[in-house]
Each structure stands twice: as C-alpha cells, then as structure tokens.
Image (cartoon, rainbow, N blue to C red):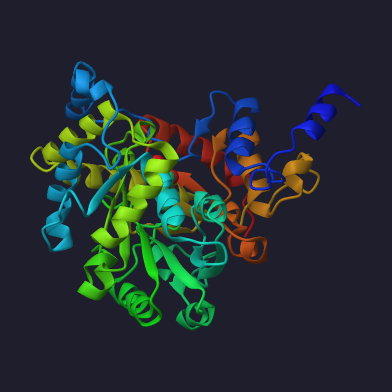
Length: 429
Ligand SMILES: Cc1ncc(COP(=O)(O)O)c(C=O)c1O
C-alpha cells in the first residue's frame, strides 16, 4: 500500500466533506491557470477586480492603529457597526431597527447563513431552496442536519434564441406549495439573485410571504446584492409585521464595498430570531474580524453622504451593458439582469468540435462544463458553468448557459469582449 493510501485509510474524513466531487471553483481556476492563453481573463468567481473606494480603505487603515480594534470584538459585533447598519437600513425597512437586538455581525454573509441554519435547523427539518442556488447553502444546511427540498426557477422558454429580462425566470407556485409539508422549517430566497440576476417582484414575494405565514416557517432572505438593483427592489421583510416576525435578512459588507476578502456580513431580523443566530455564531467563530468591522462601520456611516450607493449601482449597470454588447454583436442571447453583477449567457449556438479532448473530470459533467473548458482553452476567458448550482435532476435547465461576473475593470471587460469575438467561427445557427 502506498503511503498516501495508508494515510487515507487511517484518517478517514467525515462524511460531510468526503466524496464531494471536485468543486467548480477549483475546476475553473485550475483550468484557467493551465490555459495556453495567458494571462487569462477571469470572469468566473464573483470577486472585484478593483479596490474599495478610498474612504473605505482609509477607515480600515485607521482602525488598525487603535488598540481596541486589534482585540476581540463583542460576539454579536462591534456596537458602532451594528448602529451604522441599523441607521443605514431603517428607512428601507420602514421601521427604526434596534442595533442591539435586531442586528448581528457575522464572518461574511456565508458564515451568517451557516449560523442561521445552525441556530434553527434540527436533523430532519426541511429547508426549501430555489434552483439555481448559491452552492454554499447546500453544505451549510447539510452540516446542520437539515434536508433540502428543491424548487427550480423555470427559465425563459425562448432563452436559447432571444435575450430576455431575468424576470422571466419564474416560480411555479403550485410546485412550491406541493413541496411544503409539516417538516418545512425554512425557505431560502436570494434577491437580487446569483446567478440569474432576477430581482423577485413584490407580487412573488407576497405569495411566498403568505405561504410562510400560513405554514409557519422562517424566511432566510439572502440580499447580499441589495445595493445593486436596476428595477424596483422589495425586501420581503418589509411586506407586513407577520412576515417581518419570521424573516432573517442577510447582508454583506464585502459585496457592498468591493471587499469580499474582509469577511464582514450581517443579519437583520426580529430579536427572537437574531438571538439564536448570534448564539450559533458565538460557538462557530466567537466573533468576527475587529478592524474590518470598524472599517465597515465608517463605510456605512459615510456611503450615503458621499453618494456611494448611487454611484456603485450606476457603475455596475454600466459595466453590465458594456460587457453584454459582445453578446448582442454575436447574436448570443442572455438573461438581462435586474440586479447584481452576474450575467447568464445562452451558448446553445456554440458548436463544440466533436473530437475535442476534454479531460475526464470535464467530459463527465454537463455541457456547460465543456463550454467553460473550451472558452478557457480556446479564447482565454473563464466563466462559471451554472449546472453546479443545480441538482443532477434539474441540471439540464442550465446546460447551455455560462455565468460571467462583470465586477472587473473596464479594460478587462474590453479584453474579454475582444476574445469572445473569437467564438464567431464556432457559432452555428
Ligand atoms: C448569493 C450569495 N450569497 C452569499 C454570498 C457570500 O457572501 P460573503 O462573501 O459575504 O460571505 C455570495 C457570494 O458570492 C453570494 O453570491
């Protein structure tokens, strides 16, 4: 037996991490690093290609000089940050949020959601997710012992031939109702949505809210892209006092201020929910990074005054239009996003050469993995295959799509466009 095989036998990993197939991020990033076209234009992962604005950077740097900012923060978050968030969100929640009881700080939105699942889900409880889903939800729910029930968003019928608004990804409410049962403890929403770019309409949210009240389950509303909406944006928590009572709204300072590496997230909701999220967070990581919480506090205090929210929304919408020009030019249809910084393009017209040498870990996956591999190798642009955000059963819905993140510098977007023009010779109609 080889040494590695012997060690593998000795140190069996826990089921929750064993047997997972290679994740999309490592497939795409490894392929990108090995591509013959270098430097690759990476529009895969949703990190920003530029820095936070100067007022945000200055705030973080100043925090590092303060003794208290280099020590543990209170487990529920630094008082200044909780107050800044309560102040920044009270008007859009239509109520004066109490920073001590209705806001809690987490290590990114991701750990915040893990804390919400750990705080409320018991083994056997069911959590409803819409497909496509942000992939981290799955392991976070499974680690809490929950069972996931999936409800797919239905894509636009003519998505392969025509560009249409992301609003055309729709919910089959009968299917959603059939999925609800006495074990249903929670539903997870994501608006603006990754990867679809849909902003759930007020009417859709009202129906979901009514179901939550009727069947008495919790709504976890992942609103990390809440500052990037291009159509009217409704927070489900604001629909009625009954809905507020059962809703946890999740935010991310990393997404808001172009600083995904800061890992500062937060949850807003009624005291009877927030206190158990905070309790789980205390046991998972005790408290979150102090100087960057302080930096985020100053950022929230100043953002409105310096016009940052308007500027960031307009700038991202502009980047989206700038990048999507290439799809219009090539006749590649896409789902025009209503929010966020991802766009799904439908590449059904791109014919992959029959004898193309895909490696086994790609050829065994749906067509979008092959499209992603082909783009990396042949044109030098990395994008994400969205079937990763589906169960195997529903993966075919997205197998012609690729997800591109446009939160990159304009010159990078222009290079990507120039390279994507190289797809022309593979397009067959
Ligand atoms: C829908 C969604 N929720 C949550 C997150 C994670 O946010 P954070 O970086 O604050 O953990 C992401 C990041 O990509 C996301 O797309």
